[in-house]
Length: 159
Image 1 (cartoon, rainbow, N blue to C red):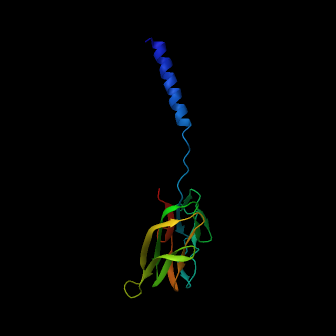
Image 2 (spheres, rainbow, N blue to C red):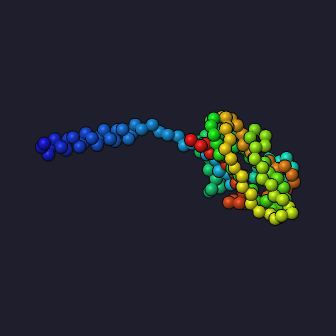
Image 3 (cartoon, rainbow, N blue to C red):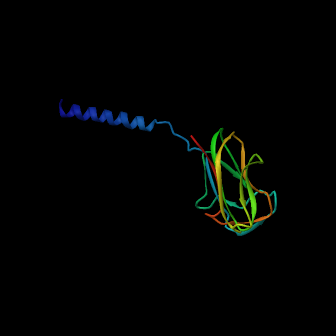
């Protein structure tokens, strides 16, 4: 093969490769939310109160793939199995629920007799439908250390 023919063939292969790359379907990011606490140090919450002191603009907070956040609640954009999680840094004894559509699904408990304060983490897989709402609600009067990296919650779609 002549040098010119090889060069033309390589040019054609390069053009085909770049065109295939350019026409790969764009894949949207999977639904994901991680919301950090708004830095308020210690906050006292009443029983049956949705925790609303979150900061979506925190450098560690993230919303993607259609996840929505409004007034303490995450709204899921599409059906699927989601890992839902939360960590709460208790500054007193008490109980906090992760809720799905205002119904308790997971519980974190800080017993005042063992250790008076500390972080508790919980999470699990839930089948959620588009429009389902995830939130954290107090079950009892309690104090929470609402600081970034100490208290957070979120969810992500498991593909």
